[in-house]
Amino acid sequence: RRITHRIPAHVGRIWRSFELARVRLSIVIPAYNEAGTIAQVIERVQAAPYEKQIIVVDDASTDATRETMHSLNDKTNLEFVTHECNRGKGAALRTGFARVTGDIVIIQDADLEYDPRDYPKLLEPILDGRADVVYGSRFLGGPHRVLLFWHSIGNRFLTLLSNALTNINLTDMETCYKAFRADILKDITFKSDRFGFEPEFTAKVAKRGYRIYEVPISYSGRSYAEGKKITWRDGLAALFTIVRFRFFD
Image (cartoon, rainbow, N blue to C red):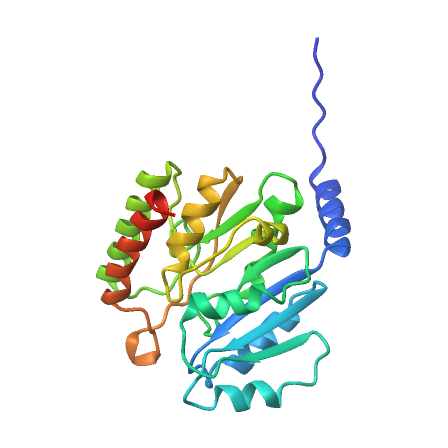
C-alpha cells in the first residue's frame, strides 16, 4: 500500500526560515505626495526581518515627500530616485524595477493602507515552490477598515472583467500587494504610466502562464479626505487597459 509522508509543520517553518536566509527581497515603493506617511512606511518595511533592498521612487511630489525621503537616507539598503515631472504609479514602478537586484520583488504603497507584517503570507507560496506571483487580496477575509461601498463594487467589477478575459479567478486584481520572482522582469516589459499597471501586470503574467496564488491580507483603507488618489477616471482607464493588454499587446 502506498504510504504518503507529511512534513511536520515545525519542519516546514524551519525550511522556510532557511529559504528566507538565502533570498533577498527588493521592495519597490512609488510615492506621490505622501509626506505624512512615507517615513512610517519605510520604518515598517525596515522592520521586516529579511535581507532587503528598498527602492523609493518619488514621482515629482509637490509636498515634503522628497525632503522627508532624503532625511532618512542613513540606511545602506535604501535607494531614493526622483522623477522631475509627475508620470504616474506605473512609471514610478518601472523606474524602481530597473534597479532591482533581489530575488523576489514586492510592491509596497507609500501610504499606510498595506501592512509589511503581511510579507510572510506573500512570500510563502513562492518560497515553497508553488507560485511565481502572489497577490495579497483584500477580499479573502483579512481584517479591513470599512469604507466606500461603490469603490469596492468598482474593484470587484474590474477584477471580474479581467478574470473573464484572462481566464483566471482572482478576487482582487487591483490590489497593491503583488510579490513575484524578480526574473519575471526579464520576460515582461510594462508600459502603463498610471494605475493601469495593475490590469496590465495581471494580463501579462496570466498570458505567459505564470503560477499565480492569492493570500488574504489586512487592509487599512484611506478616505479621499485622508489622501486616497485613485478616482472613477482611473476606473474607466482600467477598462480600456484590460481590453488593450488582452487583445492588442
